[in-house]
Amino acid sequence: MFVMSNVLQGLATVLDTVLWLYMWVIIARALISWVNPDPWNPIVQFLERVTEPVLAPIRRWIGWRMGIDLSPIILMIGLMFLDKLIIWLYVQLFV
View 1 (cartoon, one colour):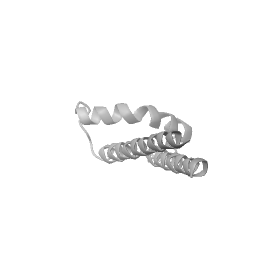
View 2 (cartoon, helix red, strand yellow; view 1 turned 90 degrees about the horizontal axis):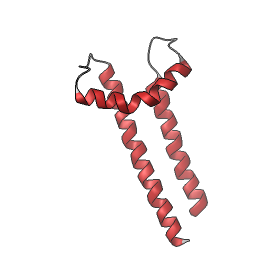
View 3 (cartoon, one colour; view 1 turned 135 degrees about the vertical axis):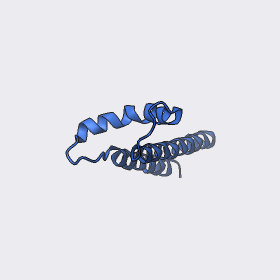
View 4 (cartoon, one colour; view 1 turned 60 degrees about the horizontal axis):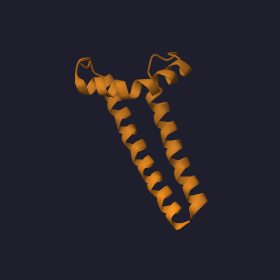
């Protein structure tokens, strides 16, 4: 049980870090969208390739009713919820 607990703690830590990094990628994408970025810039292309598959369904779900793109905010709230849920589940199961 001790080994399994450590493995799951390691996985939870890695997942927490990946979600944290992805949130920063979303923030960078949102900040870059405020200016007129060069679409051929490799950084802009990377940010779009990494975030668009997740943001596009959220945009379709909420629609463009307000004229402002709220999909990054909704995605970040969802990621924070997922992060806290994983940590809570780990604490409930193994502590």
